[in-house]
Length: 155
Image 1 (cartoon, rainbow, N blue to C red):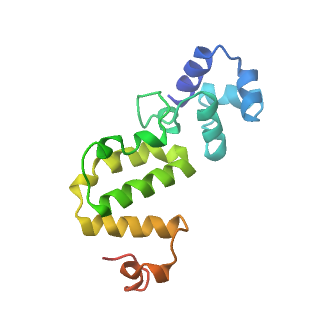
Image 2 (image 1 turned 180 degrees about the vertical axis):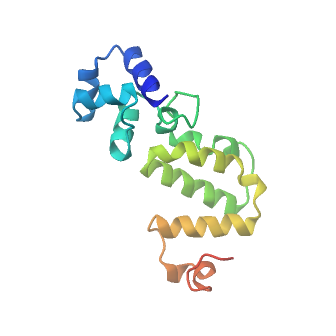
């Protein structure tokens, strides 16, 4: 499946295997092996491949059937249309920032953002605090909710 998707998108861009390989800094034999299903692209190769083919890693890996490349603005489009509490707005902003640092996370974050309305404010704040810590926007000392239990992240 991965190989078929790579080949379909590459041919749709009228690129040869050599041209695609050159665009992502790989050897054309690697692209050929991906397309034949002998290898599966991983890590930075997968990210570069998705970018060169103007799609998402999720599409290449079969996690979605939508080949359109998602962008950070679509992560919280649904939640931006409705009023939110401050905790919800903070979480939405942090998810956008995380997605901007790693666009390949957008596919996974999209479903999270659409389900934010189902979370309590306390849960939203706990997630926001954790993201602030992970993104380096706050120290553990600044997040008493996370610190009070020794950093184990329990609410």
